[in-house]
Amino acid sequence: MTEQEIYEIYKIISENYEKYLKDLGVKQVNLKDKSGSFTKDALVLVYLAKDYPNTKAVSKQELTEFVRKIYPEVSDVQQARHLSKQKGYNIISGTRGDINEKIGAGFYKLLDLKSAYPSYKPDRREGIEAEDFEELKKAYNYKCASCGSIEG
Image 1 (cartoon, rainbow, N blue to C red):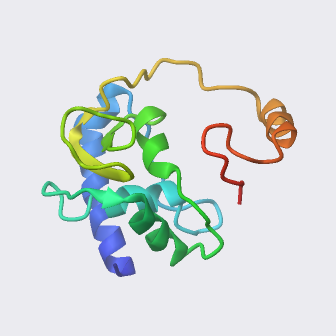
Image 2 (cartoon, rainbow, N blue to C red):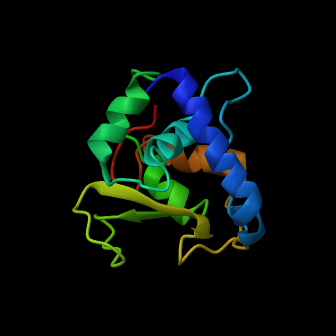
């Protein structure tokens, strides 16, 4: 996928966000961070939104390989799961056992950019303070408590 394609797909995501998702409390994904680099969240969402509205199921490995083109040190992307459960995008997971559509374990699919993920709660508390989170990560040796992947 070229940089131009990333921008074009992100434009479709942004237009749908403004039209449908914003009012549902879905959290907008920034295309770039403060340093001007693409964010991992945006890269994963763009990859899942390719050919929208005719999206396809994408393996976690495909997502990881795509993100590695920009972030070569990435070992395992978790963004697809976070985009649905924490940010509200309507992304199903074969691993999570979503029943809307059978896509297979280890696969993700963006269903649409018009509705929020069914169990998403936009008004839930954001989480813990940054310094407390840093201490928690340190206590777990910077490993994800869910999957065991190492941060960075």
